[in-house]
Image (cartoon, rainbow, N blue to C red):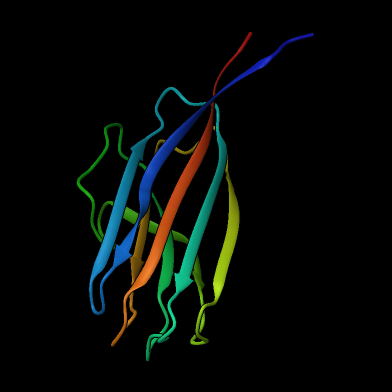
Length: 128
């Protein structure tokens, strides 16, 4: 029976997305066979006035483009918000197929308070 070899990749290490800031991370997947993305957002004891959004974007470029918002290179394929309640922890997953060449996760939109954010990817690197 074949065994899938998996590698954990950090797109955005757990960190603070300050109020009115944007945190992005990118990952080139040219040799990957797909995988699963997990996203986590945690509101603090004082929730933001506007929720933090996690945007999942892909780029069709043959090489990894610079991080950026949706536009010429990056296209949004999924968006989720964590709401406005205090101490809310939101966790989501999104499957990325082998056809995706480049991946970006962008956390943005929260105002007045910071939000803790994280994005990890388990990549299928080979089938042995």
